Image (tube, rainbow, N blue to C red; front, side):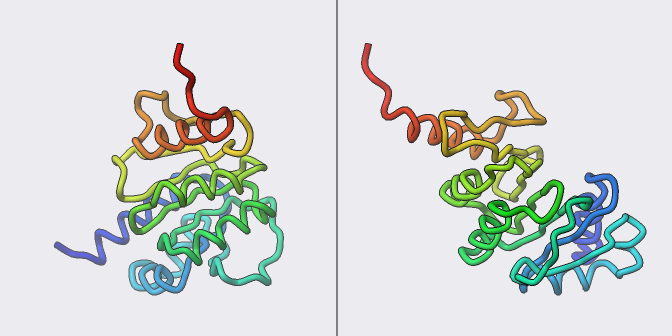
Length: 175
C-alpha cells in the first residue's frame, strides 16, 4: 500500500468537498503530513489560498473564506477549535480529525459553536458518512445532522443529541 498516495487521496477529498476559496488549518502533527502528501501548487489548484496553524493567534478575520481544519484531536487542539468557534474568523468550518473524537470533545465544540458556522465534523471513529452539525448544545435545541437524516447520523451525533437534551431538560421522568 502506498501510504503517501492514500493520504493524498484523502486530503484531495477533504479540500474538494468545499467549493470556493478556502483556508486549510493544521496543527503541529498534521502540517508535516500535508506537506509530504501535497505541494502548495496542488493546494492552490483546489482553491486553497491560505494554509495556517490552528495555534497561530495572529490570524486575521477573513469571513469570505471557508475553513477546512485537519487536526489531531488533542486537548490543546480542541481548546483552539472551541476558541475559534466562539469568535469565528471564517465563513464556515469543516472539521476533520486524524483520530477518534471523544463524546466530551464533540460536546465542547457543540457548545462553542453558537454562531452555527460548522458544516461538518468527521473523525475515523465513525462510519464513512459521519457528518454532524455542532449547532446547539447550550440551549434546548438538540444537535442535528444538517446533511443526513437522523437514522443515518453516526452514533457520536445521536449520543451528543441525547446528551444535549438531557443536560438542558434534566433526566426523563417516569410516566
